Amino acid sequence: MAATESDAASSSNSTDSSVHEDSDARSQKAPPAAERPKPKEQLPIKEEICRLRAEVKTLTAELRALGGLPPSGNQSEEKAASRSQLWRQIAAKQLERRHRAEEENAMLRNMVELQTEEARNLRRILKRRTKIQMMEKLLGKKAQQKQQALPRATPATSEDSSHVFNQILQDIDQTYADVDTLIKEMDTYNIPCPGRHRRATDNTVNGVCLELMERFVVPFSVDATAKAFWDALDKLECQEMQCVDDLKVDIQWQMQSSEKGKDTVMVNFNSTYSVDSFIWRSKVRKVVRKYVNDNATVLIYRAFIEPKLLGMNESIGVFWTSTLLVDIRQDAMSSGEIATFVRGYFYATRRDEGMAVAEKLRSPSNLKMAMAVWDESIPRLYRQVESLLVDEAIKQPFNTGSSGQSLPASAAEGYASMDIV
Image 1 (cartoon, helix red, strand yellow):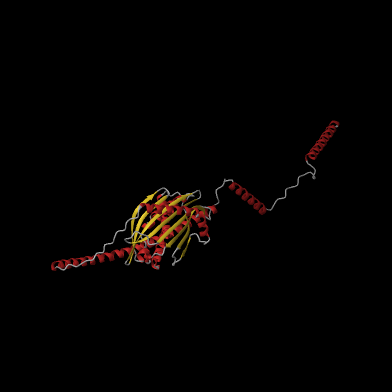
Image 2 (cartoon, rainbow, N blue to C red):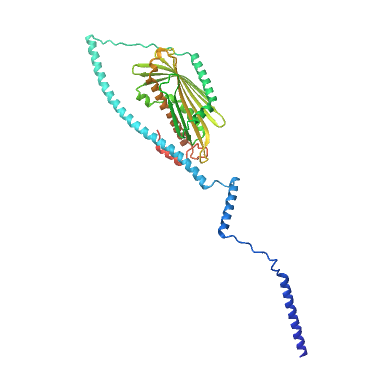
């Protein structure tokens, strides 16, 4: 019994000691309540989302500034929309020209049919005339015909032409030196883009009688646009004009000489005008010059026109000078895409020395005819340049970049199917 009691006492003592040790260990591990860290205050879910979105926008902007991200989809869509709108405008113009060409073709077909009928009638008349002449010859009554022989004009010497060309070249260089001033004067008219402005004085005797200003943008490179203008200006006078037919004027051109270099073209030719019974001849010297610098290409066209009466080589004291300045430079569109901005400034001047022999050339109808020719030829030059650019772009592979030198595939296929004339 004694042993049993001693064993029970020892087991109770060991149990008490283990309980004390566990409580001491827990008391050592558990820190006091004052030393425990306070739980973080949690933001509402919406505020946390807004904060994270703002942080994402900030980091995205920094990454895009470093060039690590492409432009956003909205910017790409704006560029594509701007470019497609520009091509849509050009396509509409080309379609309008096609419709106009179809109308002219139909009118020409009617004219051909009418002329064919007139040729048949003329053949009948000639047969009758031949019979009448044979009868007159048999009867000894030949009709007397009066022929008026016109004396030939002696051609101008090469020394005179070289002197005139040198003077034109000097005038063109001076115009290029004043190109910035001329462009600033154009900008004062607040011409829209695209847009044009015309200013004319019908009763001008000496000075500027006509001014034509134009502004437009094309989605092509500066070099391609300058080349199109260079080719179009070379053939400016060789085009048939509707206004000449309307005014019933007969114009004949006769090339004398031409010299073409890398940046200068000089052409010397004669033109003969016939209105009713009045006939006169004009000596024309034309120069086209190209200036290329870092940010722009400038083309200057100048023609010096010296009217002379048929059969005479002396001056009659009336002179015309027509000048076209084309400023072509690279410019950014509203969407940030690169395009080519074109300014065109044409002006015609007249100088009259008051000689009596030129009285008929001072009539208002002659001035009206000259202004009608310029009003048709200069705007048509711009349309021809646009058509040349489109035709050249269709020939190139359909892989447009930012330079805009070739058409997109869809636009090119549309132009090709239109069969522009």
